[in-house]
Amino acid sequence: MTGKIELDIRINRPREAVWTALVRDPAIWWTGREGESLSFVLEPRPGGRLFRDLGADVGHLWGHVQVIKPPALLELTGPLFFSTAVVSHLAFRLEEHGDHTLLRFTHTYLGEVDPEFTTHANQGWRTALEEGLKRHAENS
Image 1 (tube, rainbow, N blue to C red):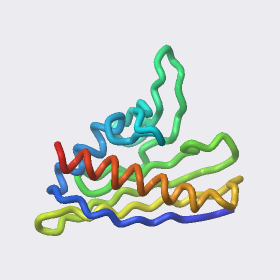
Image 2: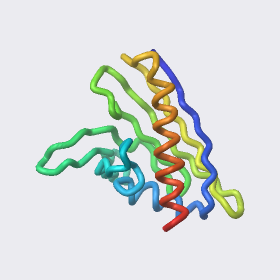
Image 3: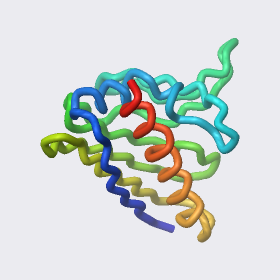
């Protein structure tokens, strides 16, 4: 199955501030359903990893940085949260619009995905980006 999720999020901060929150602080803004930290680490360089660090060499590799162009573009590829044959591509595009930044987010995926995934993932991304990243960037 293939699919695509697209979200536009208005963040009331300059692009550089949103970029900093996005790449430096994923463990702060990217939380689970109950608001708990998912302990994400992002290595912001080409080939850098995005992974959950659960300590003692335990965790989950989500993907690698495919493209990084501060403060405008971050692209990641990898399996993300899937434990099946799936490849995902995430794009975080930051556009400066005077007094705010527009985050244009895209998640494209291909592989063994439950047909109901898109509905759940759309809400999950909206929660992570609107309630997590946006709130964190605007309050930093």
